[in-house]
Length: 191
Image (cartoon, rainbow, N blue to C red):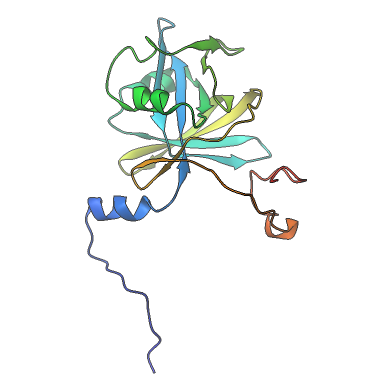
């Protein structure tokens, strides 16, 4: 007897691939830095993750066609701003084309002078550790240098091509189920 396999196809286009990957909910960040003249630059990025605790590494993916990424790469440092659910307008500003995205955005300087967007959940200042080929994107690994304070609010989430809210009662899983979750910080913080 042949085992039943799930319905699927190995013949798909980029639209179908995007739709399938859109089933995975992500947070939204804005990657910021300064250009050679110390003007702020940045772009919205949903391809971001914590990579390693020791050493403290993060990763994000930048489109090869991005005009901002080469500026950030040249600077060698960047700041990841993790957006709160009240920052859809910030996400939209940094996700759209345009040269002066900071015109209507309030920000402060990190210890290295990089733009930290106000009202984000938190931020992490990083140095570029490595860059790898990722198809039509670059995979950027950064070493965390400074962490921002954490705002107690809900995250801005992106799901199926739109923003999503996290109105919920939380369920606390058993600790053994979370041992391999890189970003779980233990205790009762899931309540």
